[in-house]
Length: 187
Image 1 (cartoon, rainbow, N blue to C red):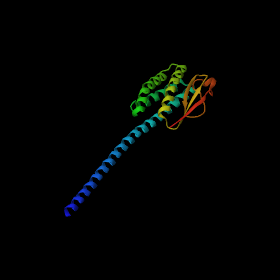
Image 2: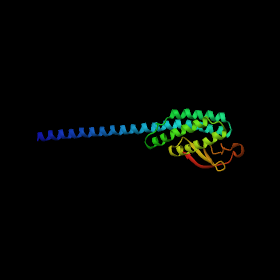
Image 3: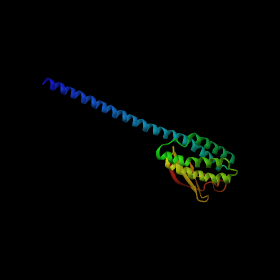
Image 4: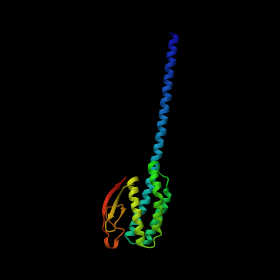
């Protein structure tokens, strides 16, 4: 009987220890998984913060075109290029990483072309291409706050704005208010 009690005691202590080890292992695995997830979202949060600064420069570029100020448009495009380089092509993970990486070089090229544009017409033509790219990027990756995708059928071109009011960057002297809100993009 004494041997039976010792055997049960050893068995009970062993089972308790095994269950504690398993529980600690699961807790450790859960914490590691949670850390990996948080690291991924931290990178995405950093991307969104820097992308919001980039978008502010885009809105400044749009306003420079509304004001028909080629010099200011070039300055805003230069800022956008610097900010894009700070963001870099490898900031996101998974499908978002591939999406961003595939668009990064195209963005860089069109921004450089706007910076180097010799006329407002050239800058506006490239701005249309830039805007089309950013509509797709913001629609896929989101943005901080609300952004309005606006479109002018007379100019056959669209743009993004951080305000609802239509201020047409393509035809500001003759049709400043020409356009409509195509969609409202959030988050």
